[in-house]
Length: 271
Image: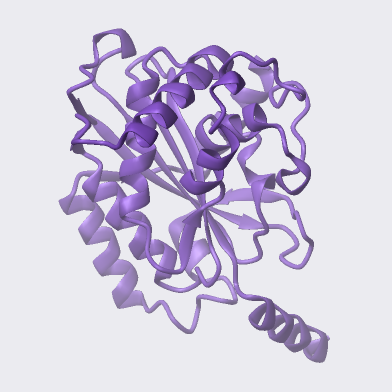
């Protein structure tokens, strides 16, 4: 049994200890503004923890006014915003677009958005895509990212991932984190020139079988995440204490496992 455990650890190290960060941004009424996923190839230990903290502490107030984009970039944004409004139902797609771009600035070198801006740019370069019907309904029947060529499907995965469907977007054998941000006002009253967040929470999860391609996950506490096999020799008690102090200093709360479980359950019931 011990040999089997070491064999699994070695296999995990050889393939990269992949972790996953799901970011959900919602308005004061809980209406989603953005749901996006970051994968870290070597995200174990302190890597994803510090990247998530960097993102969370830099998203509390951002300027989303465009600053001299090229004609091609302007067209890309216009087409994408049409897709975000028509097929994702976002009321202020320009805000959704700007927030995801802002997140991308603070991802560390080990991580990347599951669907990159470059991927989307190539897929929606033709303005006609803004009026085509999607070939696949992601909300009714989620499918694997690896087999999806439908541009509308990719836009939905990139911008409106949910607690109940984000997990299958990429491989994960090292655990996961959540950032949930909430604004003080409903989406109708949010300014496109300036965006402020009133609440930021961090959550954690573990996989049930870390060596399956798409294992199941369950909510966990920060300590449970820190003490899993890939992290226990890297994350000390002192580090945990300092990390929690930084969260408190930046007014970032912890999401309990019960809250995470409830969020996933409520989304399933609302489908």
